[in-house]
Amino acid sequence: LKLLEKPTIQHIYNNSPSWSWPWT
Image (cartoon, rainbow, N blue to C red):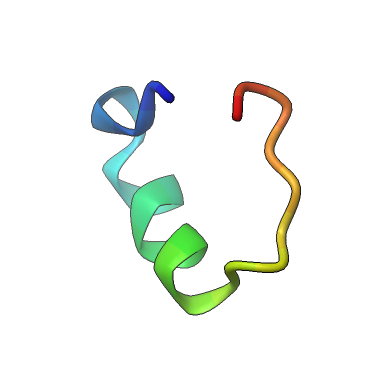
């Protein structure tokens, strides 16, 4: 997980746990 590179993505991920990230 490279959420540190995209803090905005991290925020979205917390609101959308169902979202499938390519780097998860």
